Amino acid sequence: MSFNLEKLLHDVFKLRNSDVLTVMYDLPHGSIKDTPAWKSRREMAHEWHTKITSFADKYGMKVNPIVTYLATGTNNAELPATINFNKEEMPLDDLLKETTIILIMPTFSATAPLMNKAKQYPIRVGSMPGVAKHMEQTALAADYSRIAKTCERLEPFFTKAIAAEVFFSSGHKCYFDLNTDQVTHLDNGILHEGNPGIVHNLPSGEVYVVPNESPESMTKGKLPVMWNGDLLIYTVFRNKIVGITGENMSLASEQWALFKREPARCNIAEFAIGVNDKAKVTGIILEDEKAGFHFAYGRSDHFGGHTGPSDFSSPDKVVHTDIVYAKDCEIKCEQLDFIYADNTRETVIKDCELLA
Image 1 (cartoon, rainbow, N blue to C red):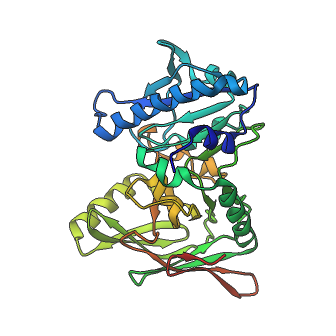
Image 2 (cartoon, one colour; image 1 turned 135 degrees about the vertical axis):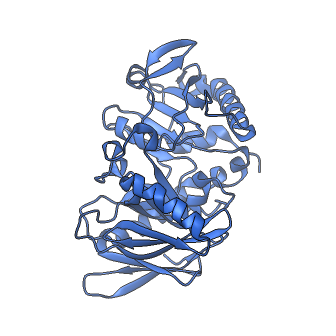
């Protein structure tokens, strides 16, 4: 079945005559070098912009010229204060005041800063960091009404549980303290309302929460992470990564030195389950994370957590990095149990299959 962009956008955004839609992407510059995948992503943005313009009148919707900005160089760092609008420099905030829908297709994720901007402006954002053309036939082609229902079924597990324990195919396990006042988020691909603003990744399909980040957090265990073919083990205590080991001791030492230089990287920032049944694991985190269980380290403020840009030494060091354990990953989530206050458990993932 051929990809239907109009259907996708109407399902996701419920297009209306008051909408002003903006397509955005980042640009390589200086030491941030271009790549074939990046060039292809920009071409995809222009292709989508042309198609959207062709059916905009049907909905009485205005479509802005494509907006560009200089790439930040790292995922989820703060966006530049100015962007390029119709070949002229313009404050980003001025654009956000006049836009209702944003499709942002960058190489470096802008999800976190746009989530914070959405607290100020009634924008609806489809954030698409690393999006690739093949996703039109995989995760972007999913039934988003079905995804929304799956997210709704999963939400009570997150809200009722005090913890979760994850067992990995590497033989390691980690306990996540969910006894927190944080809101459970449904990235369900439904962006029909935007006051206050709302930001979802597109393709969508995950439920997530910030674990307990307090000094008393009970999050602890071993998180296995593959790094260019080498297995690293992140030791976690009190919701912080406190050490990295592995058979490649040189790599482990190098990685641990990186974390020690930026202690905010050590924060366990997200506990999440991806539920998009069309998502494929290809090495592009935007789609990979929608395929199964994942956690993230680093920044959490955009999800309501307590770790933000000010906790890093400089803007270019800010990170929110997801690690995925879906069916086609080298390391898999063999089992995920939610744990309740009476110490009972409920298994929601078994052998990478979602049971809920």
